[in-house]
Image (tube, rainbow, N blue to C red):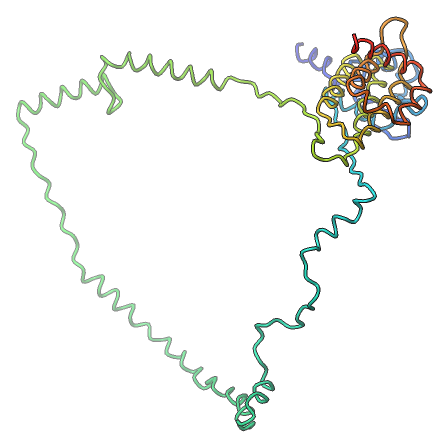
Length: 371
């Protein structure tokens, strides 16, 4: 009975659903996991809707706010309670393109051509003749006549193999060795005193069967110490292996790494989780994005990454009557710390003209900073 209840509660016993992304990519996931992660999708799985019968759920995008990678990260979270983001893109400036290859070949000296042949080659016969013209050519040409040196007639020599007589010599030598005489066993004289000592030893051995251990008077002390040591060793090993905490990538010394896609991956997944009411995923997106921004080195040529993140956030989140959207609040908190570096950027001015909520939120946050 307990096994049946466990199977019913396990997601492995639920039927798989086909998930179709905004661009047409297809994924599969157990229906039980969908109902656990999202309140909205739970109705599609367990309700009376068409998706519950067809086992097919279509994820639609609104104004291109979602993509197939976002859906894949949601499904990854359903199984792992975590998700991964892409690596930063490397963008080289125009002045740096081709510079790396030139640097690598600066140490090569191309003024002198490489020799056609290696220096350790032996001189040919023709070179020897030219260098030593005084010697007769016939002597040089006679060198190939050295081939007859290989004595072919000596092949019959292996016929001497039948001489296997040394084996008999070995046997004879072995037979001539005298057998070792058995050692004389010393006679043991058993007197009355020796017999009593032997019986006393037998009685001790019965009480203490382990040879070499101390007598019974010290065993209790050793057993207590062994118990404490064994229990301490047991408790030391009684630990649960924790997975190391997630750490984002860092760009401390590399200003050519574009983090736009990394920032937008967190923001898109936040928008997805907010729309489909996945509270745990939404909170995780905020935590990972805040941690990424806290480790992010804001180089001058990376200001555009932050502006694009702010632009996407205010284009695909909703303004509340009271309070502020959590993702919007996160972006404003970050930009207020470095607002002086953004003031002269044209893309920020365009964002201020287009998104009035962004201008109001930034002005309110700057008021808190100045007070």
